[in-house]
Length: 220
Image (cartoon, rainbow, N blue to C red; front, top):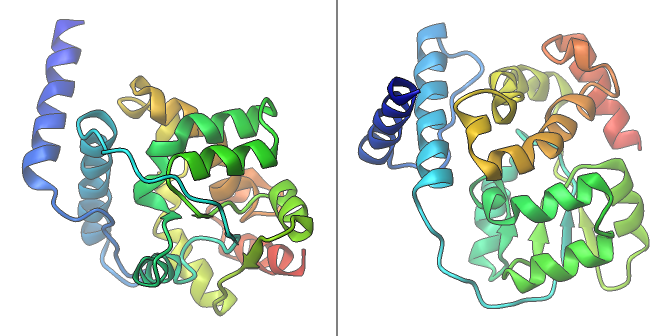
């Protein structure tokens, strides 16, 4: 037990020292070793943020946008652009700040109205939530603008393949030892596996399935 705890402590220490960027990207055409390096670096960064860094409280806001595009459709750049315009989106870096809200949303113990209220109380006004039930609700919600980012399906699928190893990270050790990661597990599984494959999770690393899932999401 102590050996495992010591290994985890070393991993966290390495994360704090070595990782500076919040989101670490790689191109789908990168070499295998490059993808492994980027994947490990991103994992260390997430561990450092999830378990070490305490975010300062944000000024409460009212949710105005519902961002429903899939990841790897320019969502990181779009999130940065929204920040320049004065919005406060919930994207990759901010997910752990609202992990408990997303957990309640996935469990059905919090309505989408309540989800938006709580996100606003945490200082966010543009959550990225690519769930079928959320899109249906947001499309009818007053004062909410639904925004979807798009990309060529083949280029998207090739790019998405580079992040599929992260799909089950919240369910795996050492990530599963962290409460915020456990809270995000169901949400992560839905938006990274079930939605992109259109309900065929066993094929979440199959390019044709991903291309079909991308089309199904946009047709929805």
